[in-house]
Length: 151
Image 1 (cartoon, rainbow, N blue to C red):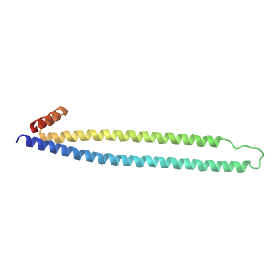
Image 2 (image 1 turned 120 degrees about the vertical axis):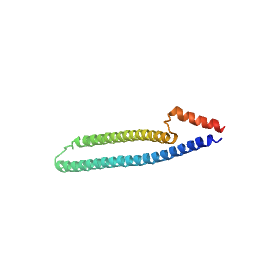
Image 3 (image 1 turned 120 degrees about the horizontal axis):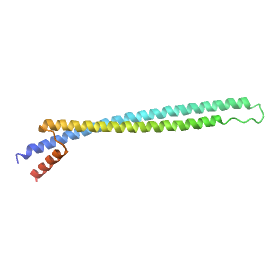
Image 4 (image 1 turned 90 degrees about the vertical axis):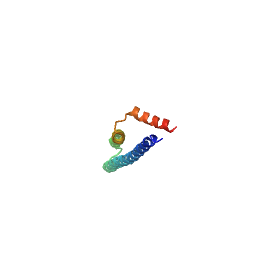
């Protein structure tokens, strides 16, 4: 029974350390996600501003064309402005889609880097506490041995 207590205590300490690391990682991921959401929102705002500016320019252009042609009989306004506006909207949608994809890729990459860092930290802490490096099988065997000794 005395042999079980240090192992059980070590197991509890390691799990608490792992919990603390996971909470820290969640906090960091949350902050990164918030930064990315702000960046994406900023991109949306810039695109909206550009679309609004294009629409104002289009309206001004149409008004100028209307004023120019109003005294001339049966002259139609060219449709080039409408095509330009449609093209601008399509380009804006492409820009937004690309920005969203880049944000997703960056977030995924940072999550992977954070997971790698957490694994390294857990291995280093375990090595210092136990005195040797535990791989997955060693860790699993330690847990099973502890459970076996308790039962």
